[in-house]
Image (cartoon, rainbow, N blue to C red; front, side):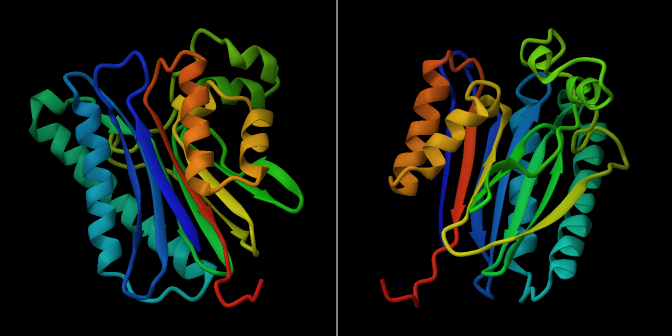
Length: 249
């Protein structure tokens, strides 16, 4: 399996409130995370950094995960714990009041990837069937699209595009979506913050993912294109490609 994590401040923001990474536990299984923090007085980067650090610590202590049920249960349990810690931290530290973060996290094995998300950071899958979004945004605009009140085209430039219906750390209890997808040779997962998905179209993403370039070159192309289109937000992504090293090519 090949992975790459990249984050970029963008061209406008003074600080990068995104965080993420790819972490390997003792059983050799990877956990990929992208978190997009929010909150005043730079509390957004506190929320996203705490989220990644806490999940990394738990992942370091995790053992083998054999089934999708085990992966989904691990994500549900540990993201719920992080939510409680963030909520408590904000309650006890006035400068962090109202802080929160999106999260998209994927446990990636040689057979499947289990993906959890809260907010509007996304996961996409590229496989033999094409390129598709795996996660559903927890945003006001997506709810309007889902209920038929506006079109996807209307959503692109909606004035309340950044209003989230769910975030990690803003409430004592939080719901998350979890889905498992089968992972086969050469399939690619893209996890990203909205600094990428708001600027680069799905077709442009597909064109970058399916080209013959290395993962490093693909990641650079994503960030360069988001910045080319304005780079108003922080841009963060993880690419995960299943690549069987035992196969003779």
